[in-house]
Image (tube, rainbow over all chains, first blue to last red; front, top):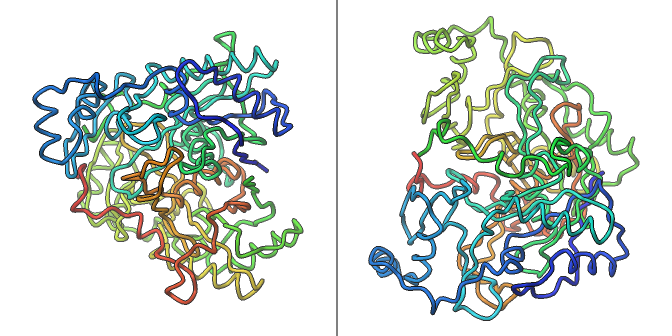
Length: 260
Length: 260
């Protein structure tokens, strides 16, 4: 049995906050003792805020392309400018002003993860994705280990749209302390047949599961996943910390990309 | 707190089996009383088997295109033939023999959901997706209601690849008794800002969550989700049964499709 528990009592996060300390306090208030087998799923938004990845829009000067696109679709040109700055490649500029692009870490998503909603301090600021979400996950894991002695798996989640399907789901943009992909190729299945192509993106599934328990509306950005049998202990040991390859392993090699 | 519990004791499913009866027996053995607030996530494979969506390959005569594609990539031409039969449109035929196509119900996935693995009775058979997975979900829900008095939410899950990301995740190909999309547009978020574009594909997140507890290798095709706050009772009441719109609502209108 796996349990998904949203932590209460994480306060509004502001730049410079120590996220590990906030989480340890919330765990203590709930009388939960962290273990190496747990996984904590943390939304991108609080990680970005803690890391100061917040931009006041008054500081942004939009380029001509951003102004034209914003005017066409009734967007804020400064936000469009930030999206373009955060992108290494634009895949589609489409209906409603949506920009689908690739970020520096290889994520393909809407508006490069630049978000106007839910940024403390009003509508005149935007959050950007963490510069290196895997590094953010490793740092959070190290911070928790330092404070509690336990090093859980960490997933940093964000909500992504998908081609061909309505709605958004949470996926893993960063992780540490767990293998993001579980490779069952060569494993006999329940009928004894060897499965030929079954690599499961468990980090993404953890992010989606946590979203059911946490959710966008309530201020519950941290969810504890307990009882998952492929837990933190399975992480690659080679790096000495058991952090594993991170969510970078979820980014498809562009040579394999069928939908450029 | 949400719990995810894989049911033990579901036997090998064969055509004609009564899936509701098998699930009721497994719940009884685990001493679990079903409620309207529960959600059961069931893998496509057992639904397809129970519905007789199993094809012996000796009965399949591949067309020329199927033979050519199979020869090029070392595939079984009869399986390729089934993929083409199950497709209304082929989006890509690609490396390794992969076919990405659209099924009759609008799902875009690899090999139209035709699967050689895990079909009881050896390698010479394939399973096809249920003809109407939403109808399958409604029928299972009705069968459970009839036997137990409780009508939980039902999700029928299958594992899909995604553009730009490695690995597969489970998504909902059918559902009943829950809203597959939760629309937060117009809801104030934790900062009081109104979220402009936040429709969450909770049925897909339920499918992914369940996969963590069930899993492909173990024969645990049914996972009980308990404690989800947006449970079965939120389903659309308009149809008299509370079945809701089904996973058909997750299929994006092709006019909005940016990646044809």
